[in-house]
Length: 240
Image (cartoon, rainbow, N blue to C red; front, side, top):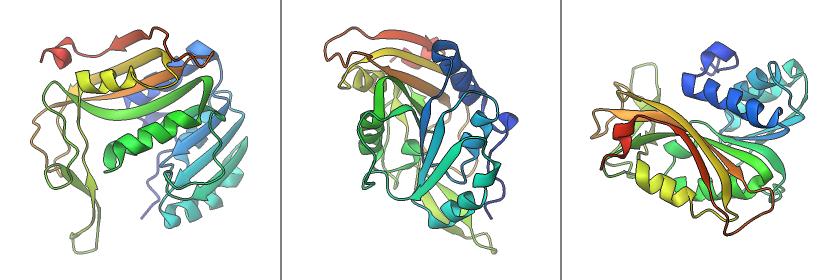
């Protein structure tokens, strides 16, 4: 059931491929990677086969996918480790110890969205990057699995086995939250586009902007510096 994992460049969305290329443009390397919600480690495999990477750590709460990921470690050209854990309870992840922290299709599917974002930011070293995928809207955001959700696994009879939270951020509120991060970000990059929610999603939104945001931590750990925004989103995303 886990064989369809993404591990090739073409398996990733345009916004994700944009983010990978942008990081290399800005810093030339991904350095030490922490992949939160790593699944079978396809992200690390795809990036390390294409770009400079020092080492890769993938964490996921699902023991089955971590078990499968462990079987694929030999495919990596760099040191790759996997850990089955809840990122909010994980031990041994020192603050500021990773050059690049990813949350792709993780925090935006979880009820503890804000806590996961905060934890990821803590793990980013000064000058490093936090990369997050998210759904944005000019309307009011939603983080309520009873009102916005999507089945992500089914049994052989087509009955949902697992229902995931389908988190949507109001665009202005999300970037306002980013501006309050401590230490302050130095740069925020973003790219996204309008699209329809998945046909299996139960959500009040007819259209959303699907995007990826890269948040770079101040190299000096500045608490009061200015944040430079480099955003490529539809202008009507910020109309309300």
